[in-house]
Image 1 (tube, rainbow, N blue to C red):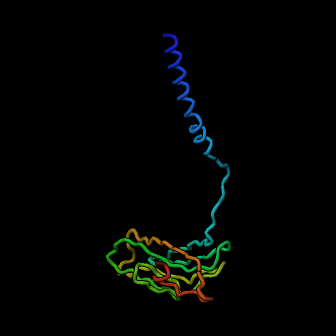
Image 2 (image 1 turned 90 degrees about the vertical axis):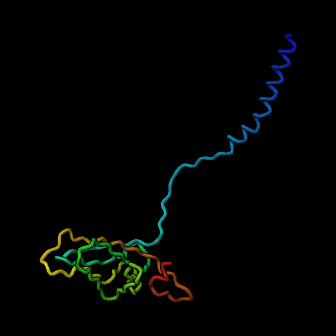
Image 3 (image 1 turned 120 degrees about the vertical axis):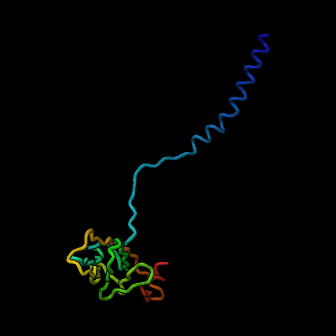
Length: 155
């Protein structure tokens, strides 16, 4: 009986030892690294907004640590029951909910002013707010020429 128990124990030990090499290989192939890094995508803009009565004046600035960009702006406003007018020199309505600045905004430069206002017969409108979302995209030159800013450039 002792011989059978000894043989069975050796057989179990042999089976367990045969799996150690593959388990060891699995646990030694994983590698860890320490440290971190930052990713700069190359364009950095900010929005300047000033409210004057029922009018919001919007300018998008291309910061010094950026690169030449195209800019588009989307405006969100509540239903005031009165029309909201949007106008600005150098800005065009793309018909897709965005207003596109027609020129390239160079490093350290700004767009011209985009003005959003409520045309109201009343002296004040409760809860007047226009939320501005500005997006910028680096200018990509194709064959030495920059494309025209508009809905097709952003697709």
